[in-house]
Length: 417
Image (tube, rainbow, N blue to C red; front, side, top):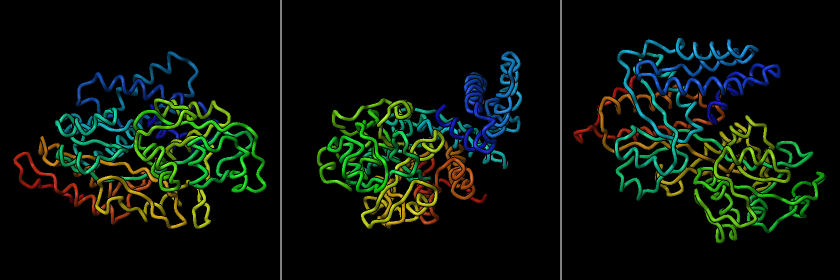
């Protein structure tokens, strides 16, 4: 339900004011029942409009009678199905990171509403399953925040490109410290995560925050123990900022954190532990941090400029994004050191097979991906992510146009939207 909470909050709760403080919980109940019902329905009945259902469940959440509430949730799950997709829909199977599920379902809903017979089946899974599932034909494409290497792509005969970008943000739990007030730089943050700096009133932290009252409590670093794009992004940034961090810990989706760092097995568990641990510092996706009202840390560039994680500074970073290998879409995008951009990017990648297993399904999948580049910007930004700039979108289109038909010939796709 991680992604569902994101979509509900951004599109309905945030816009409806403090009187709807219970809406995320009620919406989550509704989404849970939707998922259960849609999983047991035939394909032709499982095409749900996420937007309409989310809105309906927010209002159901105000009901006090549990029986009536349950009745209307079940009724809505059945009767808000869009029958226009029941006859000629084409099922496209996707496996991806769970927190992107709600956004992709919403995008698919919009795409299908303009006479495209798409029935998107998005399954959340573990990162290590994605490439195997695409290569075997079990799914038509995957959505991941951990890019494959060039060798992995070649061996499995896959194509990869970024589709959109979010940011990874350091977050803290410090009494009396408001969001975007505390300033750190890459070197100090690296020393905190390696255990060299252990107290919040350390001289190096105070030097970056003159006049701020910092508590004399122990720093409690938290990190993820599972493979994650968030860990890849933050460790890459810290490796560039500190030779010691690069040598001792290094960059990767899984790194060997020191014993001073408490490890959590998932993003959800990490999020909860940050809230419950006074003195904690960790890292999280910007959109999730905003939704959960976490205390963000600003970063000081080597040039002296101080930036915060918001849409403006994130857009600046995305505009200046480049690939680490000089090529395109092989490892990851990084923000150029422009001095006025948020420096820790987390691109979301799409992985496709070089050769389609089913031409009809792949043709529709490519049309959908192309449509998200051209028409999906509003939905992407409302969900707290940033679309790719046109130059990178153009390169992505060139990449996925290399997909071949079942027979090994060029796949003919009409991209006229």
